[in-house]
Image (tube, rainbow, N blue to C red):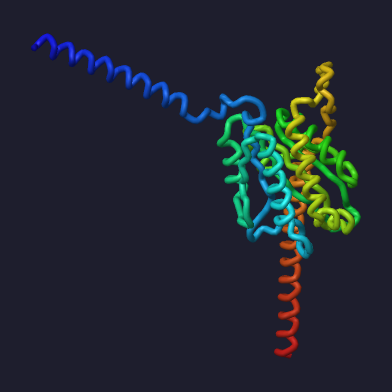
Length: 284
């Protein structure tokens, strides 16, 4: 009786261990894949940043077309195109809300194997200003900027204003490849008319998506691979230009301040002299 009971207990223990092993295996199989284990396009997270939003209309004072609306329109279309291609897509905003720049960058930096694409439209006081330009900051972002600009500028009827390196906050603070695309001037009547056309906004989204897909095919100066079909774009480095402009602006403000102080002193002395003369006349 005692021996049979011991055998029964041993059998129960073996079956319990077997169940535990099976349950653990089933759990491992059903566990969602880690992002870093994905293969192909799904291994990349694309963070799309629609510029401006909420109280921030974008553009310049008196601008008729709100930039925030056009950026969100293109961003949503880009989201749909990339999702259909199998990419994991994250939007920094998907409605008319204001998102601080720091939050936008933090969202991009929170994903491994991500790229950050900021969508904007240009504006200028001169209505004749036109064209497409793409910005980057870190050198690891140049291939992405080259590919995106190659397709967007190549597919648009607007002039090609080139790739530019500049220290915009969202580019400077990003720890992942990041670009900012200026998709035309809303202050230019011809470009504004195109941008307000839904089919043109769809085309912009598709060209940006093509650049994202083909970013690995950018030909570097050292590459001789036949697959690398997109030239690494030359760029205008505006990082030093902008800092020198800020420096000049700072100095001009100082000079202006000193000048206004001198004028104030002169006017005070002049007013004092006039007051003394008036007082002397009244006493006489």
